[in-house]
Image (tube, rainbow, N blue to C red):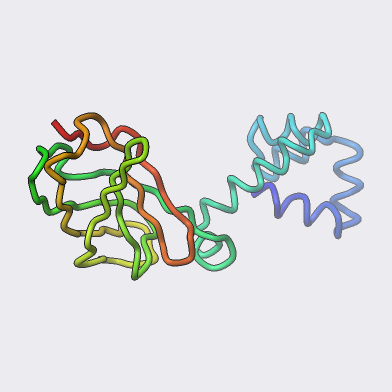
Length: 164
């Protein structure tokens, strides 16, 4: 991991000497990718920071404990309904919290789902099920789906639902 390498480099005089004599060999020995090596060699702080962020976000414990988890929507079903229809909406994704709400959105039209259940709340592989009444005067067209957690964090899947 890049973060471990940088941390070791800051604290380990032997590694500092090795790095000053043969930086590429030292980075390769530490298992750094070509992209990581290039960013360090160029001193590109923005790229190094982004690489560390990406590295840390892939660590489950870090994502769940220290970083505010990103609410993501993977799928929506059904994907279509007619005006006047009442549907059972299922949204699957990551990090939906208890109390989350799903909303179909188009321009100034919001169609909230009455949330019935949330499975695997606060984790990857969450699902939310709720009922949505599509008003008979609802505009036909493509709607985005939003899942909003009680803390205000939300996930958006654009163009995920159609009223036709």
